[in-house]
Image 1: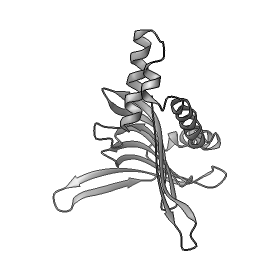
Image 2: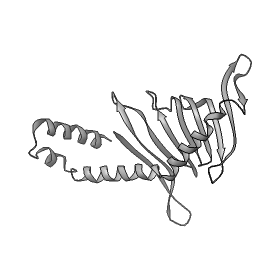
Image 3: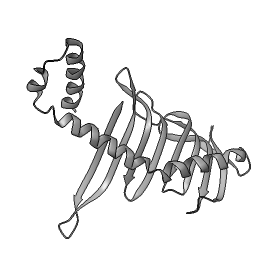
Image 4: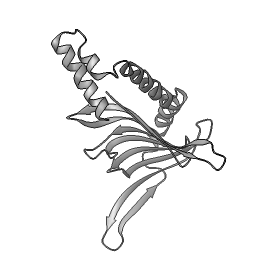
Length: 189
Protein backbone atom coordinates (compact mmCIF):
# COMPACT_ATOMS: atom_id res chain seq x y z
CA UNK A 1 0.00 0.00 0.00
CA UNK A 2 1.34 3.41 -0.93
CA UNK A 3 0.12 6.76 0.33
CA UNK A 4 1.49 10.05 -0.96
CA UNK A 5 0.53 13.67 -0.41
CA UNK A 6 2.12 16.66 -2.15
CA UNK A 7 1.17 20.18 -1.10
CA UNK A 8 2.14 23.58 -2.46
CA UNK A 9 1.50 26.46 -0.08
CA UNK A 10 2.12 30.10 -0.85
CA UNK A 11 1.94 33.38 0.99
CA UNK A 12 -0.95 35.60 -0.11
CA UNK A 13 -0.67 39.41 -0.19
CA UNK A 14 -1.84 39.63 3.47
CA UNK A 15 0.85 37.32 4.84
CA UNK A 16 -1.47 34.31 5.14
CA UNK A 17 -0.43 30.85 3.99
CA UNK A 18 -2.90 29.39 1.49
CA UNK A 19 -3.11 25.96 -0.10
CA UNK A 20 -2.56 26.31 -3.85
CA UNK A 21 -1.89 22.82 -5.13
CA UNK A 22 -2.60 19.53 -3.40
CA UNK A 23 -2.24 15.97 -4.67
CA UNK A 24 -2.97 12.86 -2.64
CA UNK A 25 -3.19 9.26 -3.61
CA UNK A 26 -3.51 5.81 -2.20
CA UNK A 27 -2.75 2.73 -4.19
CA UNK A 28 -0.74 -0.42 -4.70
CA UNK A 29 2.82 -1.13 -5.75
CA UNK A 30 4.25 -3.88 -7.91
CA UNK A 31 7.99 -4.15 -8.51
CA UNK A 32 8.53 -0.77 -6.76
CA UNK A 33 6.10 1.03 -9.10
CA UNK A 34 2.74 2.51 -8.18
CA UNK A 35 0.34 0.60 -10.42
CA UNK A 36 -3.18 1.72 -9.52
CA UNK A 37 -5.11 3.76 -7.02
CA UNK A 38 -7.39 6.64 -6.13
CA UNK A 39 -5.95 10.11 -6.61
CA UNK A 40 -7.29 13.52 -5.61
CA UNK A 41 -5.86 16.84 -6.72
CA UNK A 42 -6.62 20.49 -6.23
CA UNK A 43 -4.65 22.53 -8.74
CA UNK A 44 -5.46 26.20 -9.37
CA UNK A 45 -8.89 25.77 -7.70
CA UNK A 46 -9.77 22.82 -9.96
CA UNK A 47 -10.61 19.56 -8.17
CA UNK A 48 -10.03 16.25 -9.92
CA UNK A 49 -10.31 12.61 -8.92
CA UNK A 50 -8.80 9.70 -10.82
CA UNK A 51 -9.59 6.08 -10.10
CA UNK A 52 -7.52 3.77 -12.23
CA UNK A 53 -4.19 2.33 -13.24
CA UNK A 54 -0.85 3.99 -13.90
CA UNK A 55 1.89 3.06 -16.36
CA UNK A 56 5.58 2.61 -15.49
CA UNK A 57 6.12 6.39 -15.76
CA UNK A 58 3.37 7.15 -13.23
CA UNK A 59 1.00 8.46 -15.92
CA UNK A 60 -2.72 7.72 -15.90
CA UNK A 61 -3.09 4.73 -18.21
CA UNK A 62 -6.24 2.61 -18.02
CA UNK A 63 -8.90 1.25 -20.39
CA UNK A 64 -11.67 1.63 -17.79
CA UNK A 65 -10.62 4.73 -15.85
CA UNK A 66 -12.99 6.99 -13.95
CA UNK A 67 -12.02 10.67 -13.96
CA UNK A 68 -14.08 13.30 -12.15
CA UNK A 69 -13.46 17.00 -12.66
CA UNK A 70 -14.94 19.73 -10.43
CA UNK A 71 -17.70 17.32 -9.31
CA UNK A 72 -19.78 17.95 -12.43
CA UNK A 73 -17.80 16.42 -15.30
CA UNK A 74 -17.32 12.65 -15.35
CA UNK A 75 -15.18 10.75 -17.81
CA UNK A 76 -15.36 6.97 -18.10
CA UNK A 77 -13.13 5.29 -20.61
CA UNK A 78 -9.63 4.87 -21.94
CA UNK A 79 -6.77 7.07 -20.80
CA UNK A 80 -3.36 6.56 -22.38
CA UNK A 81 -0.22 8.25 -21.02
CA UNK A 82 -2.36 10.77 -19.11
CA UNK A 83 -4.56 11.69 -22.10
CA UNK A 84 -8.21 10.81 -22.58
CA UNK A 85 -8.42 8.94 -25.86
CA UNK A 86 -11.84 7.26 -25.92
CA UNK A 87 -14.92 7.22 -23.72
CA UNK A 88 -17.92 9.09 -22.37
CA UNK A 89 -17.94 12.61 -20.98
CA UNK A 90 -20.98 13.08 -18.77
CA UNK A 91 -21.98 16.43 -17.26
CA UNK A 92 -24.16 16.51 -14.14
CA UNK A 93 -25.73 19.21 -11.98
CA UNK A 94 -25.44 19.55 -8.18
CA UNK A 95 -28.13 16.87 -7.72
CA UNK A 96 -26.17 14.40 -9.89
CA UNK A 97 -28.73 14.61 -12.66
CA UNK A 98 -27.34 14.20 -16.15
CA UNK A 99 -27.26 17.49 -18.07
CA UNK A 100 -25.56 16.18 -21.21
CA UNK A 101 -23.14 13.53 -22.35
CA UNK A 102 -21.21 12.47 -25.39
CA UNK A 103 -18.90 9.72 -26.57
CA UNK A 104 -15.61 10.66 -28.18
CA UNK A 105 -12.65 8.94 -29.73
CA UNK A 106 -9.29 10.45 -30.56
CA UNK A 107 -8.22 9.53 -34.09
CA UNK A 108 -5.22 10.33 -36.24
CA UNK A 109 -5.30 11.72 -39.72
CA UNK A 110 -2.43 12.45 -42.04
CA UNK A 111 -3.19 16.17 -42.49
CA UNK A 112 -3.74 17.50 -38.96
CA UNK A 113 -2.27 14.73 -36.84
CA UNK A 114 -4.97 14.26 -34.19
CA UNK A 115 -8.71 14.54 -34.48
CA UNK A 116 -11.73 13.83 -32.28
CA UNK A 117 -14.97 12.18 -33.36
CA UNK A 118 -18.05 12.89 -31.22
CA UNK A 119 -21.36 11.05 -30.87
CA UNK A 120 -23.99 12.09 -28.32
CA UNK A 121 -25.82 8.76 -28.36
CA UNK A 122 -23.06 6.13 -28.47
CA UNK A 123 -22.53 4.12 -25.23
CA UNK A 124 -25.12 6.22 -23.42
CA UNK A 125 -26.59 3.20 -21.59
CA UNK A 126 -23.73 3.20 -19.05
CA UNK A 127 -24.16 6.85 -18.02
CA UNK A 128 -26.54 6.29 -15.08
CA UNK A 129 -24.30 3.61 -13.53
CA UNK A 130 -21.30 5.91 -13.91
CA UNK A 131 -23.19 8.81 -12.30
CA UNK A 132 -24.27 6.52 -9.45
CA UNK A 133 -20.65 5.45 -8.78
CA UNK A 134 -19.48 9.06 -8.91
CA UNK A 135 -22.18 10.20 -6.50
CA UNK A 136 -21.26 7.43 -4.06
CA UNK A 137 -17.57 8.23 -4.37
CA UNK A 138 -18.04 11.97 -3.77
CA UNK A 139 -20.66 11.68 -1.04
CA UNK A 140 -18.42 9.28 0.91
CA UNK A 141 -15.58 11.86 0.89
CA UNK A 142 -12.91 9.42 -0.24
CA UNK A 143 -10.36 12.22 -0.58
CA UNK A 144 -10.74 12.97 3.14
CA UNK A 145 -10.48 9.25 3.93
CA UNK A 146 -7.21 9.11 2.00
CA UNK A 147 -5.94 12.01 4.13
CA UNK A 148 -7.08 10.26 7.34
CA UNK A 149 -5.30 7.03 6.34
CA UNK A 150 -2.15 9.00 5.57
CA UNK A 151 -2.31 10.82 8.91
CA UNK A 152 -2.79 7.55 10.80
CA UNK A 153 0.13 5.88 9.03
CA UNK A 154 2.27 8.98 9.53
CA UNK A 155 1.49 9.04 13.27
CA UNK A 156 2.40 5.37 13.60
CA UNK A 157 5.73 5.84 11.85
CA UNK A 158 6.54 9.01 13.82
CA UNK A 159 6.89 6.75 16.86
CA UNK A 160 9.89 5.22 15.09
CA UNK A 161 11.64 8.47 14.15
CA UNK A 162 14.71 7.41 16.10
CA UNK A 163 15.82 4.92 13.46
CA UNK A 164 18.51 3.18 15.54
CA UNK A 165 16.25 2.85 18.55
CA UNK A 166 13.54 1.27 16.40
CA UNK A 167 16.03 -1.24 14.99
CA UNK A 168 17.16 -2.23 18.49
CA UNK A 169 13.66 -3.15 19.62
CA UNK A 170 13.61 -6.85 20.54
CA UNK A 171 11.62 -8.27 17.64
CA UNK A 172 12.00 -11.57 15.86
CA UNK A 173 14.50 -11.20 13.00
CA UNK A 174 11.98 -11.42 10.15
CA UNK A 175 9.67 -8.85 11.78
CA UNK A 176 12.68 -6.61 12.45
CA UNK A 177 13.65 -6.77 8.76
CA UNK A 178 10.11 -5.89 7.67
CA UNK A 179 10.13 -2.84 9.93
CA UNK A 180 13.60 -1.86 8.68
CA UNK A 181 12.38 -2.05 5.07
CA UNK A 182 9.34 0.13 5.86
CA UNK A 183 11.51 2.65 7.73
CA UNK A 184 13.98 2.73 4.84
CA UNK A 185 11.17 3.63 2.44
CA UNK A 186 9.92 6.46 4.67
CA UNK A 187 13.34 7.86 5.50
CA UNK A 188 14.33 7.90 1.82
CA UNK A 189 11.20 9.89 0.96
